[in-house]
Amino acid sequence: QQQVKQSPQSLIVQKGGISIINCAYENTAFDYFPWYQQFPGKGPALLIAIRPDVSEKKEGRFTISFNKSAKQFSLHIMDSQPGDSATYFCAASIGSGNTPLVFGKGTRLSVIA
Amino acid sequence: DSGVTQTPKHLITATGQRVTLRCSPRSGDLSVYWYQQSLDQGLQFLIQYYNGEERAKGNILERFSAQQFPDLHSELNLSSLELGDSALYFCASSPRLYQETQYFGPGTRLLVL
Image (cartoon, rainbow over all chains, first blue to last red):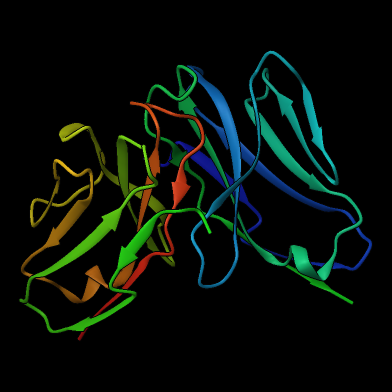
């Protein structure tokens, strides 16, 4: 059973544009939602994370939007750059990290000049 | 560089064989997680060890086993290998039992022929 559904599978964005990746979850007990970034040949690395007590969190060009009632959260990359080209994974866990992370299937982002 | 090391980087073997993947966590980290990454399934949590003890199990096959040694390094043993076991295997570590930020190693790419 896939508990975190991520879309789209792949995304092509022009340089300077906005990249948007969406995730939906089923388990209402989830209370920690991180995004991981993975470059080819590397392991995933934590990019940004949010808890359900806020609806938005911004770090530089990266923003997480969270909609608790819809059980959805999304990653927005503003002013997308070729260096942002990577695979992005959303994830969720329960109890502030008290359970193993459940990952979405990933979105391969390509930012073209 | 996350500080997590994995060996070997690449492994090619035949069906029916057994292999051992090794992970050294970041200095001071007590938790080690193993993940399998395949194209169609994304990142799948396999198993977690904390300070030498198994703490959580995910979608790990009975043919797979792991352990964490007193020096905190961990090994993932895969036996009776099948073609479908070909994947990237990642190890991650974190300081405490459950930690929101997991630091991933570079992975071991396993190819079963």
